[in-house]
Length: 140
Image (cartoon, rainbow, N blue to C red; front, top):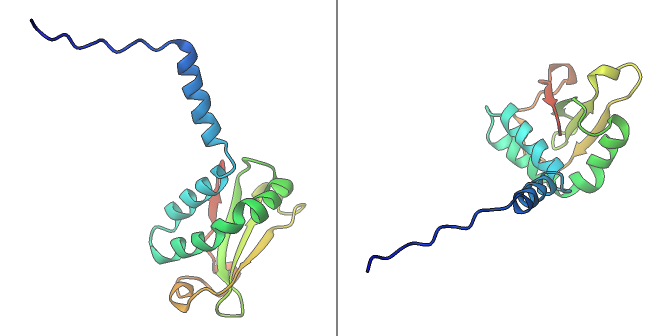
């Protein structure tokens, strides 16, 4: 007698909706902001493999608790922001500056300091703020 493989059961709309809700919940979960931020930084800094990875490793533990709440309160969620990285006078400090290009006159930029960055990483960064490459954070 030939073997008949069972036909997989049809999925109903409720389970499809639940899958969609689960995906949305994962996308909007607490860690989503840093994941999106890191994707943007990696893409924009593709010429330097060491720079983005090291900086992201330093930012990940403090992003959700310290940085993201400040950015949301100052600029709102999902706004388009500009970001630059440059060296502070002290050679092992990197400055990350973020601002809203639509409100440069009315909202100050938010400046964060990343300490203990090795010289091999800081070689990729400009010393002058005006020479820093501007990155764009969209839908972060």
